[in-house]
Image 1: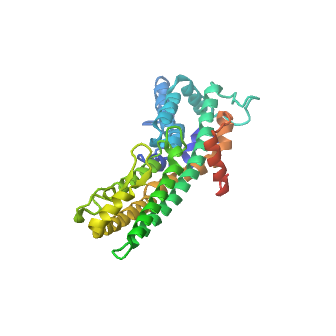
Image 2: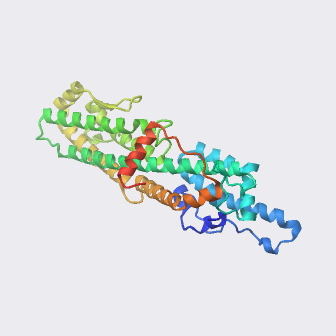
Image 3: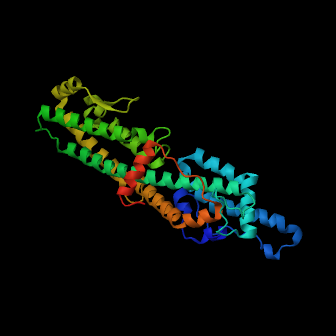
Length: 333
């Protein structure tokens, strides 16, 4: 597979990057190299290289991290715009470097700068692993969000006839369920985690957190959300706690307000969770885009390695290795 063929694969990189889709071939410019004069050839080739970099390898690498990981995307952009990377692209364009030229160290010796090409392939290898780990963990998050929706909906059964002890028990159960959700994905979303800076994951955690802390539930009864019932979230740990003494007090003075507040919260929380998992929203969109990228890399990795070299093998962290193992269990390769 030659570099120029990357633009004909049918994979829509714009979907993953959520940017503007372009159907322009990466080898097309404002004019044809064949019709340019000899003196203009260098300028034409420079334009072609810019298109090549931004719409093929640049798209491939930035899509591995997308807008969700600016640091990784920027670091690869720097690699692409370096003189060494340009020499690799230029050689590929002008010589159409083919397979069968790999050295014992996995470099393509037909390229002007095999080492830069090898580094590009190392980043592609890392993107392959990163995508699969993210897909695995985000799939798990989707399942947990669905469970949290059910947990929130269950509180809607509370009514004026529900005993105070039952109300207290159900709120305590919900707090425990919410904490299980937070603990499950806290490590994933912190700096260096599998889902760190992944928008779909961050939005999901923040949305459910804000739903619990919504002060407008129960407003018509003079209450300010679950916090007035004693259920609050620690700003540092993000874990929920229930002050049962405070709940007992408000139950004694305004039980109907408690019931109305819990029912309003139940409906709003369940709706928030439902939207996160709905078609066309954060989690399904990211999973679909990850799957497209994974499929593209799997289908083209052999050809990419033949052209740019094998690249370094990935040595995943324990967290990533665990996610990869889970990915294989759900049918991935």
